Length: 495
Image (cartoon, rainbow, N blue to C red; front, side, top):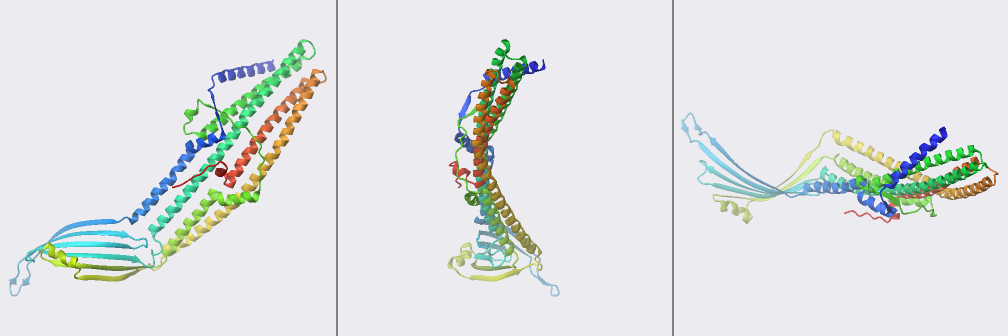
């Protein structure tokens, strides 16, 4: 009674599943190459990572803005009233004075790549009041050069920022390359899993057909009295179990379809009504595997390894800056110009136009902290940080070597398993065929035939599992080597 109930429930579940399939959307046949192309355009991880180099370019240009030419313009007016001057003893006093001063100035300043700056300055002053019989104009035009000779001479904070931003741009370009490799590898893995799931559904469908055929044959034998009713019940149980396995296989197929959709699109809802049908088959293409060659490829092509190198170079820039900060500040200042004086505006400017009344100055300014605690400790910390980065690089390098060694061995083992599982499947087919003939001749029982049917189904699943694992192992090896993009004929160009 319990067996009959289980059989009925399984049949009902299968019927519901079949009804659902009737309304299933039309499948889109898709190749692995098409999936990769879609992922390169629509994958959200790639879209996110693709924006970062553009952000870095803006940051780099922003840091260069320090060298923009700066124009300054100023104007001011002042008034001063002075009390009368004189000798109280003689009771002789002057008159109070009131004076006005107007100042107009402008300057152009250019920061230099050497850490200094050049400033072109012009000033015009007009004075009037009781102290002057008429307007008094004076003007000055000069150019000033300021240049650090020790601290901030080799590298300053601005140049450090620019150099660091350049390295960060390179790092994020490598990060984009790494993300593309990761996504392409994920698409390949998901596609091979989808092909396996599709083929496994076919295996389970064939298994169900075998079980149903045996059940039909056993029913006829029971009706004519050639077989015990128990054998029929065993066959019914096997059919119910095979239907359950088929439902599980179909559910796994749906999961693999969703996994692939998630990788190749940025709008899952638009894919929800589309079923994906893989066009490619699982093939066992022999590959020449060489650990030494794979190691060499990885050392030259792995983006994560190159990123570590760039991080070390960034730290070298920081060390250069920290080392330069250990020196005292010694700045050279040079100024050269002309000035003019007159009672009218033209006469107040003529001297500058003629190059009269030269003026110049030069000097140095020396300053330094007595202990320089901050600079010393920053430099020491920077050296230790570089040591950490070098050790991390060595750790990553060693991890890659181990990863590749494991990947090569995994690929070799997966390839060997293909032939082993193929032979197992052939033997299982032969064994089942022989046992079925014995059953037809009354020399065996349904129990043994059912057991061999299960063995054949397991062997068929194992064979396609081995094919999928081999293709996945090759994809993993390419990712470990850093050759994923080359083998997929994908080129990345950066501005």
